[in-house]
Length: 372
Length: 222
Image 1: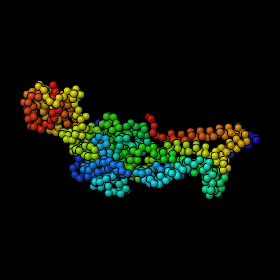
Image 2: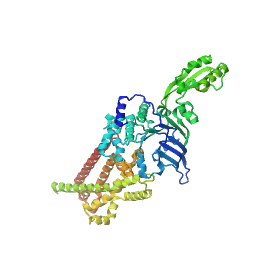
Image 3: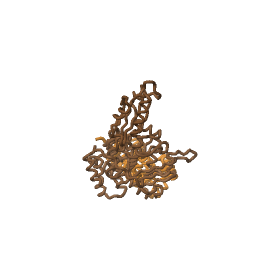
Image 4: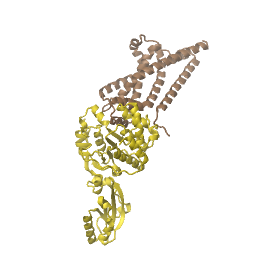
């Protein structure tokens, strides 16, 4: 699809939902093979290990999120992809090319095929929106006429067709990031790196930027690798995710699976805000049931189970009342994902019937504790 | 002395000052600019890493800047003679003024460039820019308002320095003030010279500020 077509589409249906494209599971766009990165270690100071033996791949056409707390090594990881950082050991391969083996000039050639957007936008204050988008083309030695023909449609694509003559100081944060995105797309890259691109934006603007990235991924077939500390970002647009903690990838896979059954403690912590219980409920949970207490259980619906009337059947199965205390249905990785916190009698017979029901239906559950 | 003669003296001195300041300012800035860029980009891990040369150039600049100007003027007389063929007069005075301008302006350029957000350099590198492209398309472009302010500051300082080159027959307003106002007890001449210098500095400063504002797109509001 050409940029012009994409631009009209965006203009006509800015708020439309776009299902993320199913990534191609073949040769990866990016692969990390045993990548370690240490900083310092000279002059008697101990070296700091930012990344410790990373093995990880980014599929063609996917939106892959790397999530971790600050200092986990995610900034270093993303900078290895376009050679802004060099690995201490191991290999980083982008679309079949090993980044570490490139000369400075070949590396510059590779960088022109990789767009990058930043938390603080990094726009030139002395250039208008138009000239900021033109910068990577000027750098690549593209002639003025081609630049002119290219920049306009790009600004249209990101919804800033009318801001072409504005300076960054005249634009809002979200608009600046849109210019950043247009700039990153100027050289028709095959890969887009996003370094905390929405972390400086308010929630509403964040959503619109993520929507734009999702659309670009779907319509231009661009692979996106993003780093973030917000699970919300991963949940909204990513298809694949890796959780990074202290230089190690502790868990990776489809976003959906991660939500459905988080395995590592760091993942749970990061998910916590998404799956948080209401305050009144959290403070009344007891780890051991007293007589007459009720079991508090989280039911997770996804895939097939999301569309079945399981709650009604659960009530019938238990022969006991079921209280719904919290819950909601969200879209994760383009699929519905429901989470329901319910309580029912902690009587062993009821619990037994419930567990049999869960086993039969394949419902994922987690006993959170007991409430009076 | 008739008012006409005084006016002529004043105009002649003003023209000498302007010539010296303009010539030394232009030549000194043109030489100081690349040195300043070098200082700001040749540290360890920077665009053109050459930390040893960076340190040596830094030392020379510091040495030049700590030499009192009047001593510099006399100390480089042989060099001045080599360049202009003479060591006295307005043209000869341009040489020490230029030499003093170079390190002064270079340090201001260095500061102006170091002030630029490192994120912009990173963004340009991520686009595949060469170090030279980064200097011209990012650093110099973004530093334009600060560079304009640096140039203004340099010109104003030069006007002050130019008053000292009377010591080698450079002429100019400062010299006029000393010789007529002070040595010949003509306080009205002294006053006039001071007023003209004040006006000159004001003009340079206002022009510089206006240009810097024009280049500065950082704080525009809708």
